[in-house]
Length: 295
Image (cartoon, rainbow, N blue to C red):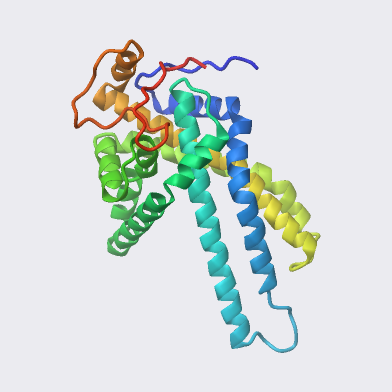
């Protein structure tokens, strides 16, 4: 495998964060893809089956109330399953990327076990985050965008530090404070690249779907495959960007690079109230991180 060149732990410019995220994504591509496929594939297939089972066949008589109720119930179930799969896959990818960036070799099964063990915390944080952003959107658009960026690292905090709920939201807010605009810039660039990736991957399947009849088995297969492939490609990349932002802010604000160096030579560091350096072991693990790698 070709060596991947990336900076050691130090403050990174906006472009460097994207660059390093892409390099980690490429180097550990198959590990990250397996994480997403194992989670997303079964749920995508189940969601497609549900949606197709409640699809209303066109006819001279319009859809009845029962048809509409079935469509709404099926659509709601598919959305919940999709969000659950995305949440678990994202958390596992955050874990794997964190391990990779700090010099370890990520294991896809261990990453999935970690995500599954924190399912309750992930769900609770998702509810709090969604409710908070919904209320912000009701007030004004500007608070919504401001909080979206300020809380963007909440799930990384949950994975890396074991914090959940309001603590994860507050920790993310504190990290981003004073670096809101650079964080916003990285997220926008990452979303643009993620959209381009999704478009390139989904275009052939989208063209193929034009030749299939809605509700047919071919349409079902095409929808499920398209969702799985797009998620497998784009989810790990955006997870890598979030992890890089998180560690960049910790290096800038908390001297995390010096902390890792101290741990690597066995020096005592930090106060008792200091957050753990990284949470890439099982919950409660006190295992110190490896020295930062230069992939």
